Image 1 (cartoon, rainbow, N blue to C red):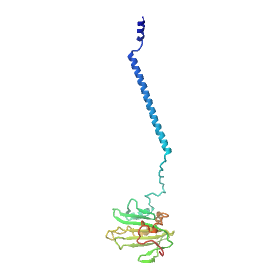
Image 2 (cartoon, rainbow, N blue to C red):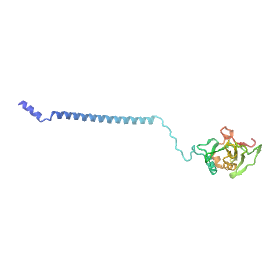
Image 3 (tube, rainbow, N blue to C red):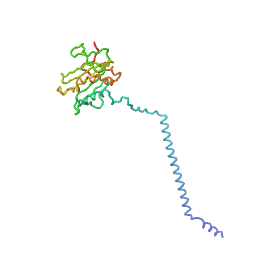
Image 4 (cartoon, rainbow, N blue to C red):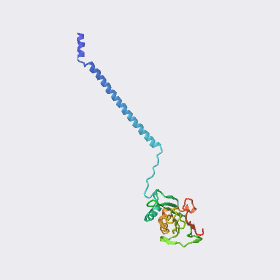
Length: 249
């Protein structure tokens, strides 16, 4: 009787094989949930560490100063107000200034000039000088003699000089003094070593040099305070055929 009752109980239970598989399925599900939880916790920890590191870096380390953006009125390396006056004059003669940046310094500029096919036409040198109370416009070959200058618009006094006798150093030069005392010298020197007067001709005439030298934009382009260095015979300044000197100097 007892055996029959015991036999009846398992008759209503699921097969042992099904129960074992169900246990393994539940264990696998639990394992997967734990893995997902661990991965999520790890990802959260990584994000937290990165955010904390960024915050500490931003707060504790000094920031690198960024250069201020250039404004329309700022002076850049490519801006040269003197060249803005010279370039149209050269363009009219089918000449151009050699790129990129010309030789330059406080109170002077030097531009190498080329033809449109790339042949050198020498250099143009423009410089400004400390204001002498009185300026002598020298007479070449007559030391101590001062010439009576010509007058341009705005009361600018100037003198022109030209020398084409030496085929290796042909020069057209102008010295100009503005009413406010600023002195500007413009010198165009032809290409040296050509062996001919035509090949060594300067980029423009003394008359054109006078037009450039007496243009107030030239003196302004060299800037305030740029008129001291060349007056001290700085070695970087242009060597003029006719030096600038005060009266009686």
